[in-house]
Length: 113
Length: 116
Image (cartoon, rainbow over all chains, first blue to last red):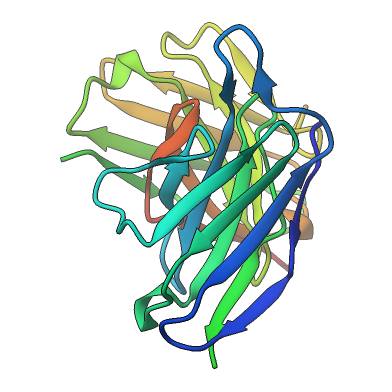
């Protein structure tokens, strides 16, 4: 199974400041035939199911604010919230869908300072 | 609007059985693989099982293999998870998820509690 490791486990950021979450996979999730990274990011607020934010490592899901962006390739990825808003307080997960079983990072909790 | 609604969660004793259902609407159910993902209280997300669009292929996490069975009835737009030999560590909210590589749509989840 591909192991996904996120850092940090938690993050406290002031409103309007940048938040950066890292995700590392134990093997590459870049599929060479189509040059796509099989990596997604989800946001989960308390009592709610996860919500898809980013797929193909950097493609924003429809309706997701443009302050959320994804980057990286191969084994190292980053989710950036450019200007943290109060409604962004949540736990964020990365996930690889390069193979099954799909695996998730352990989650990063983002809070407001 | 795509909707996935889980049901069947309950309190069950260790060693017991339970069947979860996931009712789908708003899309052509028979065209999509569907997965089950669970989340233990206060913990992260864990893949449980997957089934292909026509039901011919299934996959299970090692932690549930031999105890859980995934199935679907495309005529009823419904996904199932038959769980047996339940253990305390199976306690979790179980989500059904429409898969398109990534997980596009999630249900609200149903809580399974395994306790005596």
